[in-house]
Length: 549
Image: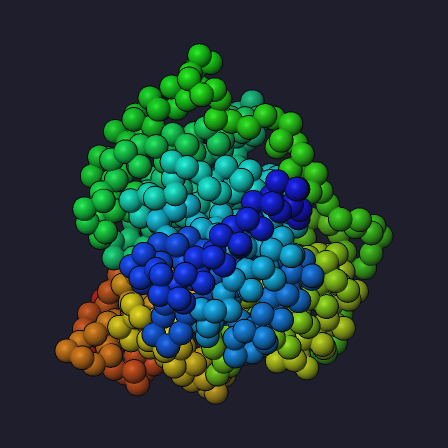
């Protein structure tokens, strides 16, 4: 993983002291809330319903045990003993006192972490495939390219105050595990007919009020022009993006209104200017040597050869977890092991300080001191020996982290909702808990197979409901929490947007509604079909008939 150099450390330390001064002035009444708001947002600090929330950046989701231990310490010392892992591969704390925020940032800085640009109208945390560097199906590890984009975008003077927030994802596999086409910019590392590596750019995706799938605006950008093309995309957006209407300010609206072809034409013109060798200000692209330097931080760990490649399935409980919660590795004798943060009845994405400490210890013992945060709000140990899996699972199980539910109906993505968020219209957490409890109690999880359920407490879609095989959106209906049911979404390489079934339901009714649509699936599916496959084959009508008669 990337390690700070002296410049990185000095930059983050300076920001901590700058924010400490700003916070003191706010507490002393020398800054109003309106004056302080943009300053705190650029440091990841939100004012929520009950307290301040701090969102910590975890670039492309990668952490080491030392950093993970500090995250646990922050949860214990400054919060209420837990942290919440998010769909942006970050962690956030929901009960922060303003006077403690500078000290938290200082603690983070000591382990090469920060909260810079995790909020505000800027380029947010660069996300990536949570199995990067381990997956057998990737062309290269995409994280060095995510890192060089992170360095380019941090404190970029032109892009600190964009029309709206901006999100970038980088992958290097045909299997999309990062919802790449639902980002403002999605980048896939590809290989052309000549065998050269480059990047395909997808621009103008996003969820929220107006969900859109990003079109491909360029199929191949040479990797030594990756940053320059990214800058061209941002410059066109920054020039023409709406600033008079926040609901129409995202780049997806600009691409839609201009049309993908016209947007791409303008990007190409900007790209050509940026590549002009006589351009005032010089090149945008960092020297090739810088990318090569960054790559050295992502070299493979010292994998062993000749290891056992078969999992002992004599223990049925362990066998179920191993089947569901491990992913094939590029190195024989290893797997990537997923730690579920979705115990039945728990809060999706939450982990206690004790559990975070344990995950840190397990990473150091069993995964070359490395962890990943998944955009599905779980944690990955990317490099685990198959021979160590049973011992690992035993320790996870004892700590309430051994749920065997990856990609099942119990593995629910949910935003904090109205329990915490000042923007929410309805609660997400109780609905997620009740659905998981209902299906676990009835023993239907295994029968349903892969079924991705996502819940958002408002139209901002932090729970990615548009991308769920089953999605749930909380709305306010004359002062009463109401839940719309959506079907048919996918955030994978077969990206699609879920459609609303019809009138919404109350809290109890939405749980019943989810059960009804799964019953339709079980009665209509053909051999080998997932829920999503059956929905796409038979359409909405059979599901609506079961729901509304």
